[in-house]
Image 1 (spheres, helix red, strand yellow):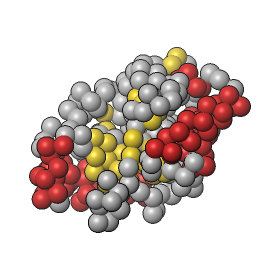
Image 2 (tube, rainbow, N blue to C red; image 1 turned 135 degrees about the horizontal axis):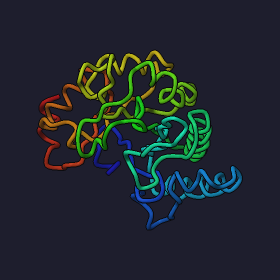
Image 3 (cartoon, rainbow, N blue to C red; image 1 turned 120 degrees about the horizontal axis):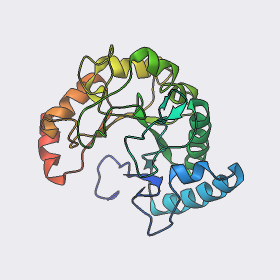
Length: 239
């Protein structure tokens, strides 16, 4: 693939661990929820081993870790809209700390990590694979969901923007197509970070992938993601 490309390629993969792990046949890694319950020393060993395996294949970009924070309502941890153990266990500061361990491990192996899913999917009303999800208010997000992203702004990681409607910010649009959401991300310290959309074929989008790609780029996203190979020509032409 590298030889066929006139411009060079970035090869990316989902490697969160657990169920969302495309290269598990090479080396299996526990989910982020499971990793939260291990010691820092154990996590470092697992992460470094896995990162070396993934880097050796030729991967450049790892779509992870997830730094969404589980909601807490009246002192009780709420439901995780994504499920499958994809989220770390802990408050915003703990999630930021765990995320930093993953970022450092991927970087030590020479790869670019991608923080998911800005501005925070943990307290959203639904799974964006199924529908456009609404988050808590922007003020609530600033005090909670945005904390890991703020803490990791100087880490050198890229950021994936989710299909999340944020009251008082995105005006009913997904953040992945919102100029205001991308501007907020830049203001938080990601001025020159690579910004990616979540997959544009998800049910939260509701319009053709090619149209969604154009709207995302107009909003300030650098890289649009879609999973249907048959959409490639239409997306390129639309852009």
